[in-house]
Image (cartoon, rainbow, N blue to C red; front, side, top):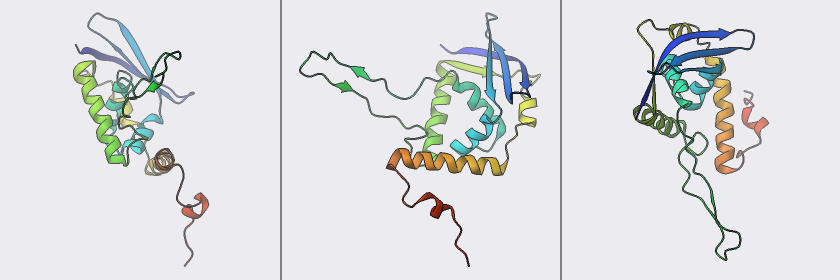
Length: 174
């Protein structure tokens, strides 16, 4: 069963660089999602997203999305067949071989969350307009964050960069 939450208020804490989104369910139970303003730029860098509205939708639904990583099941240590059983790792930001693969897997999880767990609804009064208008996403910020994500992904998948980092980032002189 999907729980629908309606956004009731949006605000910011400029001193701590945070956005907050308040919403409530049909029974009137209130919740608040607080996240750093830089989260929008991070999701753009991590998943190659460009639309601030889509990025915001992803961020709001992530809080309701289960962790995709499998749980480890410990067997009895007294058993002669004791071992740790691990399922196959799902595609995540750092197990994907590309940004496209990471984006597809993440957006699939968000869609599943919206149909099976929780859906965040922006009412006609559009309280999210303030975040979309002042999202703070810059090309320079996304580029810098994308580099960090790409290096981390490479290290997670392959154990190290193929060339020393300073050499890889230097521009050859003409």
